[in-house]
Image (cartoon, rainbow, N blue to C red; front, side, top):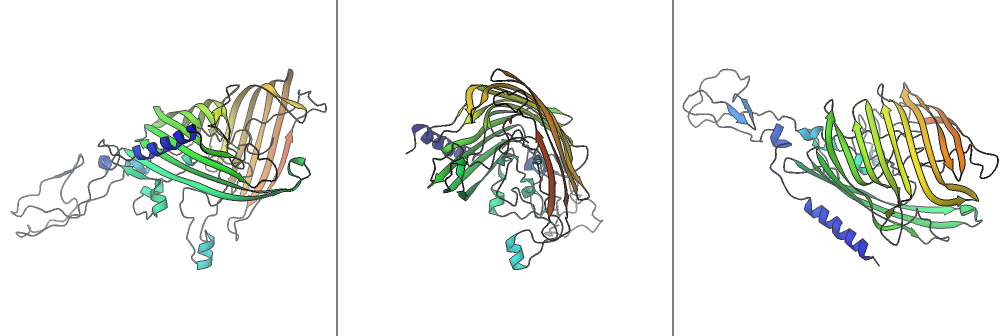
Length: 454
């Protein structure tokens, strides 16, 4: 049975979808830059000089570049092909590039088969087809950072499922929707070190609605329902979340720097930063991870800047999820891309957790942790590299912290070989203590993709 809060959630979601289907007459999109689409214009039939034609504020001669010919005969029609000018939606809104995880894969390029169906049918493509989602189920970044702008490109032939991500409502408004459903069968031997085998199924469904007004304002809402089916051990908190909101935020354009917009994001939102060793949405979990707070964002071709102050959202499978007011998480993250395929991250993270918890007899909170670090990753001529390191200081359970971590990875990608193979070798290190609860030199995770540092 749904609680009242969950019924209210469903009503609000329906209202959000219905309310997005309306039109506006402002001039940002097609009517601002693209002329109407008449296929023919009838010229004067009395031999007079054709008058200029004004199309959406652009004045041009009727037949630009045409050779002089005899005046048309009476009742004769002159066919003039009008040039289709680009729409502003081709480059707007700006899409933030997804960060490369540790042990990052290299997408296949060049001629080949890009799906099992293509392979079975013997249909090879000259290059990788454009698509907003990756070609695999695991997808760390949020749906709100997927790039579907190719759908609006002249000559594009998107299918129905691609078109629903770019539904233009008049000239200034755009609505998009999509989602994901997956089923995972799990069999864990010695599950949770209990000595028992835990065999069960995980189901998850996500559906989102994304509404833009020009590139000035955005409302994004994402629904999630996650279930643990027939477990032999009690479900974990990250296994179940029945009918809740994973994301609900507004993006407000507060200015521009060098013609690049600066946005303020307010509300419930996922975070994925850098390698995601420290901050991620944890897609391995059936429920994913999200936060509530505020985030300032700037993203250009070479530079990304993020400033945020949030609180983690605690999953509750029986009630509406809530933010933990005993935890404050803030930080600054800067990514510089010196050239294509390379990135340098520099960051500072602050975590203040007043909760009192232990794990395996080890005091993990309360804690105040400061983390500073950097990362350099990239690829060139098939060679891959990923280097990251950082230091932590603060207080945990009454003990001072001075700890560190480092990771170094080298790899190679054979882009022209069958199946596009990639090999990585990594060395990971994190400081620790020989005495339980000493805490002085133990590096701690913040909100990582995997189970711990690195």
